[in-house]
Image 1 (spheres, rainbow, N blue to C red):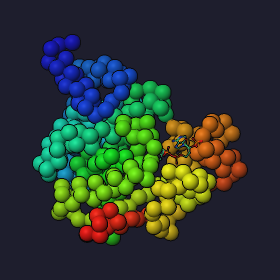
Image 2 (cartoon, protein in one colour; image 1 turned 60 degrees about the vertical axis):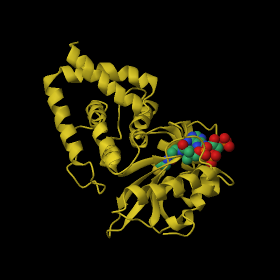
Image 3 (tube, helix red, strand yellow; image 1 turned 30 degrees about the horizontal axis):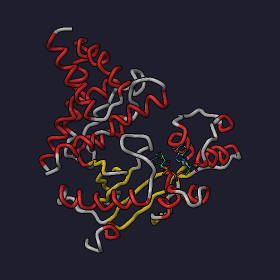
Image 4 (cartoon, rainbow, N blue to C red; image 1 turned 45 degrees about the horizontal axis):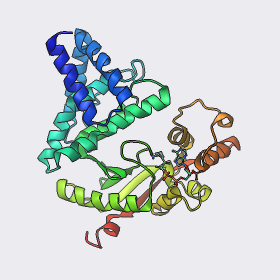
Length: 299
Ligand SMILES: CC(C)(COP(=O)(O)OP(=O)(O)OC[C@H]1O[C@@H](n2cnc3c(N)ncnc32)[C@H](O)[C@@H]1OP(=O)(O)O)[C@@H](O)C(=O)NCCC(=O)NCCS
């Protein structure tokens, strides 16, 4: 490997380290990066993905060109998107620093990439990425990982902006149980973070669309953190099919799956698998919480 190429690979691996990649993923990343960068055709493709990704920085509505357009998502385990995200990361950090976010927090906000690479290994058993579509939202610069939860500015149909709420898996970087105290703290900090760094896009509500907001899930796990989280939200009437999400987020499995063969060690595993085995379904629901609940009544 030439010295220049070695330097670029070392820089990319350095970014991955700051984005909470695990050791196994860092080890696999270096040779993949070297292969792509040494190949003129793939390097050109990488540069093009990077350009499109850059065009999305500072566009929280994620309405720019799709950086992954024309790319088969799975054929190369998402390696080119993964590298493009790493190459462009410092520019997203710079955008956030320009909005007054501390540099360390800005890198933390992008560490969802490390989580998604870890999840790819859980699901597929090897290094790669399959959630690059979702990561466009993170790379817009209006996404933040704050304590136990993650947030982004989202424009709903009708034009209203809300703070969309996401729940990283337990076991991901710094994320343990979903205790009510940790959730309260994240909500309070997030309300302050967006008021300070994105005053041009004011919001009044937290918003969430998730299988974790399904009332039947809370009913199946009385007294649990999951039930307490679900019960915070004012749920609307939209009901979507949640079977695949329930299986993905509980067992790290994508279809096809046989409910009879899913493990049943924990209460959640037992609840998810037995409902499916009975031919019943899980749902995805949407809910809201007013931010004033976390700001002492101040808008
Ligand atoms: C949401 C989450 C962090 C809650 O974890 P938690 O605080 O430990 O949950 P609870 O304390 O309410 O758990 C209740 C029961 O379910 C089990 N459980 C919770 N999450 C589990 C998971 N992902 N896999 C297997 N079992 C799980 C717990 O072990 C407990 O069972 P037990 O008493 O037999 O041990 C966790 O479920 C998770 O990581 N989910 C995936 C992320 C997700 O769904 N995000 C939303 C995407 S839209």
